[in-house]
Length: 310
Image 1 (cartoon, one colour):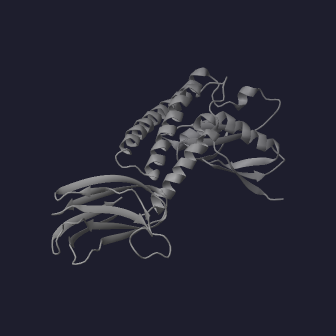
Image 2 (cartoon, rainbow, N blue to C red; image 1 turned 90 degrees about the vertical axis):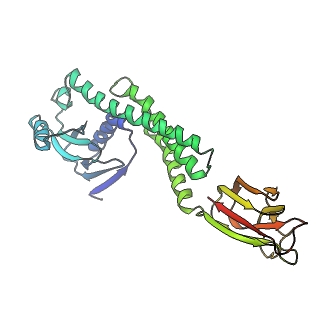
Image 3 (spheres, one colour; image 1 turned 30 degrees about the horizontal axis):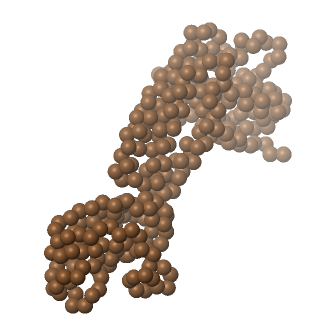
């Protein structure tokens, strides 16, 4: 039998009472906590003793030694602290002792102060996340992308969860929102990282196009790794009408025309300075942007073209 084990579990900050109960359930089975953490609790097997546990949230400790000594005076053994302000303590369980012996806050004022500490922080973080998520989600309409949408939805959901969960902090009659509510937030966040890290990096090219002696087209080419919404900015300064089209190449085809899957035509520009932004949902593959002068352009005429894809 293993002497140590790890249990990975997500607890929302307001679920410290449920975490404490789970730790004590493990202690009854002989598994004693030796290190508490944000997502992982580490246990060592010892069925000769049973513990009761206490969790204290405090980010403003001026004298850590005195803080721990205060708990030690009440019989609590200090285990460890997490980077975000949670402190784990344990005390040997004696069935003959009154239940008040295993409560770190025996008066209403102290318990309320602890709840108010977390409620204040949760409310500030929740409102901040909610506002930032809504603002940046609105900005996605100007520059849409799967990674950005997922990340901003993560902020909105996390903000809502933190803001509305504060009403249950410090209340003993309800357990609050389950920690599993964090799972969709985690999934959205991971999706944002994947798409943000592996989608095609943008490109920018600027060229001068000269009308050839024979009918042909100038092209630039790029590859897409992940399906996403891409933004194409086109800037044209041409003396005659020009047509710009983007196509996705089909395997084994090498010529411009019906052999390609043609995406919607962007526009036919008259001989002036024109700028246009288009939003495209592109799937993985190789794409080409073709630039063609329409009939009427004479050989040797030049135009300036710029393409930027993000």
